[in-house]
Image (cartoon, rainbow, N blue to C red; front, side, top):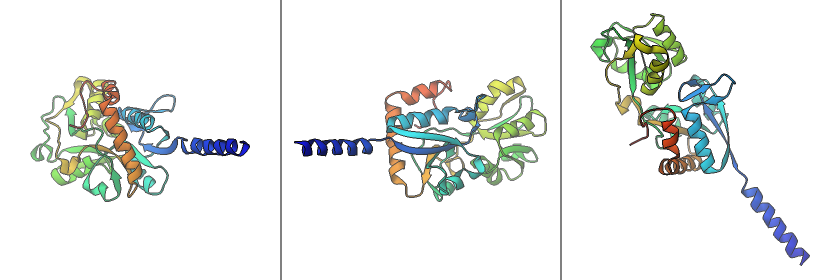
Amino acid sequence: MIREILTAAALALVCAQGAQAENIRIATEGAYPPFNLVDSSGKLKGFDVDIAKALCAEMKAHCTIVAQAWDGIIPGLKAGKYDAIIASMSITPARKKAVDFTAPYYVAGAALVGPAKSDITFTPAGLKGKTIGVQRATTYAALLKEKFPGAKIKLYDTVDNQNLDLKAGRLDGVVAQQVVMYEWLKKDGGKAFAFKGKPFLDPKYIGDGAGIAVNKGNTKLRDQFDAALKTIMANGTYAKINASYFPFSIAPK
């Protein structure tokens, strides 16, 4: 009888240990509002962060979310500093060679913003000879270089800094993600700046949307995120997060 009790207790301990939440380290940029930013108290917040937390809750995982500068975010993943990237990273053929992606968790295009009274247009002819700001090491930088060779491209470490130069009159326009610029226009641009033309949506340059990146071959974690993403989209969690940030849906179609 004592042996049976001890055996049952040992089995319960093993089961309890096996049921412990998985530890997952997630990186985001922290400089791409409203998707990821650091608030006045030093905490990471934004759409990406809320999605990450919702996915972790669905996966019953213990997640640590850290900030990582954009230029080093994929190298940091490959070096094992964290297990996944949830940072509005566009899924592109070039990045697929370095990392594995989940299905997209949102879709948005590239937008041109310039002075409201300017006649600048988001066309090769419209950007010819114009000085355009863009964040370095992004799909938007590659887009400008390849599709708008006549533009004078100026690279920045963050979208905030390119927008500051636009406000200061040192740029004719900036190209960045549509939703990010929507937020900037609403808060900082106001009547002085506006979208110029329709967003650029060619998946060859913009990708298939923003996905969660994991190391090559980590199919277990990728599949866990994909399953959790399907669930939060089906049960209304995703829609609630979306509505708390945007008056329109950015969910993949």
